[in-house]
Image (cartoon, rainbow, N blue to C red; front, top):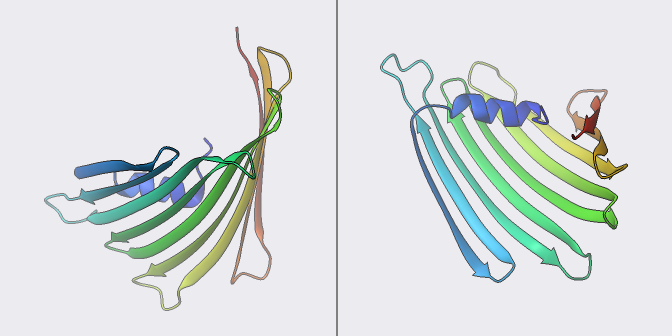
Length: 162
């Protein structure tokens, strides 16, 4: 899975309940969207509310890239979190090499824990089309913040299409 810890947490907290999505084209190459999720159960054990909004730019002329700004607010029985992010996607070598570069700021406030946890997350995902049917992906994500040493994740995969 390409999902980071925060992506998996958001997915886990918003699986059941009600969901409302909306998007609007502000201009030819700019889209704004938002979704609101609420999860509820009779036991009230896994209650959550989630608000996610994004602004997508499909073509940035001076960069020849696309970009997305995101914001997410999640409230559960045990956690309140805010996340802000920027992702830039670009074709680096025509038809051969593609890159995603992103940065996120995450603010976790655990309700049963005294201190807030604030993290800065940065990542790079490179996809190389070796041939028409063979591709290699290399992924790196680093989490920086209050901990003394950063937490680094590295993943790679090879995809053969038939």
